[in-house]
Every structure is written in structure tokens, then in C-alpha cells.
Length: 311
Image: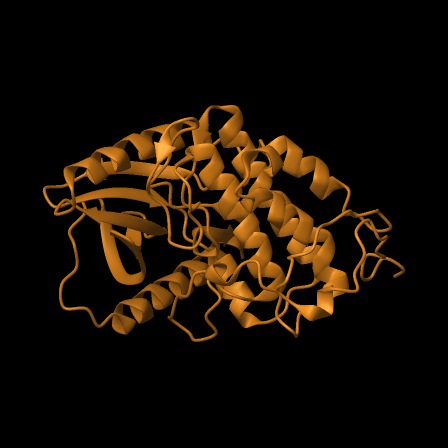
């Protein structure tokens, strides 16, 4: 009976892989030794992510960076992959790099694929925080869980003198339901000035890697609570649930504050503030001044009942 079940599982797996191959309409696929690329499932600044499989037919995610890019970027990619790979396997909220190498045309890194949220047979859509945000309103406990998980991974890197430098919802993935920080292409040392990152998440001042991560974390808080793009920060939209957002608003503002003396200095300070946002906790916050008249009546230091706390 056990052998029959195993045979059925393998047969079903092969059917899905064949269906995914039929779904691929690209004319040319990169050649990566030891892997068969099925189709491109995402692209970022300077990179592509392909769904592929190894010789044992295991599905994997293969990130490619073309060697046509600036040599300085390629050097940063190599450094980032080495730094990140040495640490990521030791923390639950960091995406583990299973393999890293080069061909004549590409740098490539191999990871587990994100969970598939496609409802269509043979299709693949990676489960990312960006997709979850687009799918509808997230419950408060889910928002807080995501923030705590991202912060845990970020803090682990920072404690080891490493900064991610490109935190954003598209780079936050879920593998077997567990949140993972992925795409370490811009990883660098904590105190090194970083000019990379994604527009809207990158600080407007010349920033270190640590400052880049803290600033991006604040922007993700804002996006999770308002569903606005990061360039809209700190505007509070009319449809925003103020009672829900304001306790987190203080943390977002503290992460993105232009004045260094008012900005969070490290992940530990953020963690302490997040730990206070528990059911029945007291949240102290400042208002996004002059942005929304609905916020004018909210007083600093008010006590908020956490939504759903009574249940």
C-alpha cells in the first residue's frame, strides 16, 4: 500500500511538471548546469526568477543575474550571495540558498520555491507578501505576525553585521506557510553606505545598510496598514481604520524619520515597541501632521483596545 501511494504521488508530481512545461511560452530558456528551467515566474531590477527542477525532479526557484550588467553589480551579487548563504540556513525567517554558481552568461542562486497560490492546475504563482496584500485586507494578528517575522530575520542579520538593503513585500515569501526574507542580491555589511534598493523603500538621505533596512521596514508597516504605495507615506487614506493603524503608525514614523535623533537606532528598539502592541497593551504614537483631518481628533498617548482582543 505504501509503494502504491508513493507511485501515485510521483505520477501526480510528473503530471504537474509536464503541465507547467506546457504553460511556458518563452522561446529561449537559459541553460544552468544541473537544473531544468520551466518558466520565468518573476523579475526584478537586474534579475529574473525561474521555476525549475533538479535531476531528481524537485521543484526549485532559480534566480538569474545576467553578466551583461555592470561589473560592480556582479561583484556585489557574488559578495551578497556568499554572506547571505553563510547565515540564512540558521534562521527560520531567512530563505536558504541551496546552490550558487556561474555560467558564461549568468550568476545563479537556487532556493526552495515559494508556496504556489495559483488555483489553476499546472500553473505557478509564488506566495509573497505583496500578493497577500493585493488579495485583500489582512487580519491584525496576521499583520503583526508578518512584521514580527520580518523583524526577526532582519535582526538576525544585523546582529551578524549584515544588512539586506532591499526589503520590500515582493522579496518576502512564504515557504510551507513560513515567512522568509529572500532576494539577497544587495546584501552588504551593516555600516557600509548603500546606494541600492528599490525606489520608495530606500531612504532619501545617504544611508548605511542598517538604515536602509529600518527605513524599508517602516514603509512595509505603512503599506500593510494602508494598502498605499510607499511613495504615498505618510499620508493616511480616508478608508484607513484609524483605531487599527495608529498604534503601528508610531513605529512606521520612527523607522522613516529624517532626523537621526528621532529615528530608531536598531532592530532591538523596534522589537521593544512591537512587543507593546499586544491585546490590551498601551500604544503611544504621533500623528502624520497635516495629512488627514480625520486624524486631528486623535490624542497622543491614548489607549487603544486591540481589535479582536475581547474574543
